[in-house]
Length: 284
Image (cartoon, rainbow, N blue to C red; front, side, top):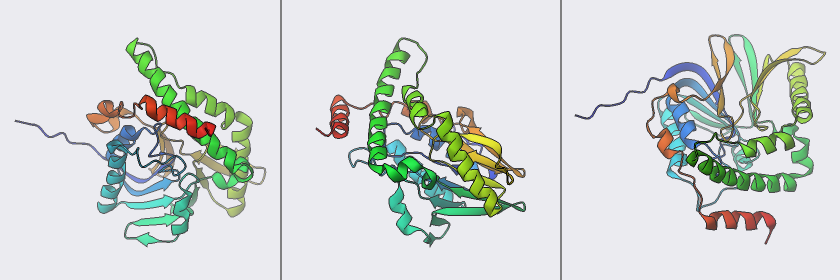
């Protein structure tokens, strides 16, 4: 007789996830699905770059990525309010800002009033100087990063075969380029300063793929700055419960989903796909 596996879902008030980059080889879709299946939030904020429009290809959108979309719809149908905040990789969604369909709404930013305190949530690319002045270079960098994640998977496949520890080449390089200490602190100071001026208690961003939870003093006041990180390298989320925000790192035991490990190998690209992606970046 087959037994049914029951998933224990944690009840929380708000969950914030960002930078899933569905439709790319770097997306950790099985882990995203595992996390979403393990929570029961009143509100789920999708804080930008959920589907990667910059690298989207009709030839690549695996079943595991589609399962994430279906899970979000299932949560919405179950009563969860879903707020989609558009990012730069899914900026096409910004044209739908203000549209509400039942429990689902499109926005460019949102302010949540929780226990008498205001939380300002937006993706964050609006404060990225590099994005505004060199958008073509940012898009080129995204393509190159996509190739890097493919190479990273191939390398880790070999490492696993020989029983070695996994490496994160793509994360190391991205931290040097986009997430360097000076760049991140400048981004954080800009966001925090504006948040203090507006009288918010918390400010939440995504975009830079650097999970954070820190109190920033701008000289004019203090504000708690949080970043929801990403689901390419860090696999992090923000949750509001028991009167405060918490940064959460994905752990397999959050929800007992047997296919997480099995689906981890879903994105092993063929040689043809790799060559095609390389040629696209190099412009050949």
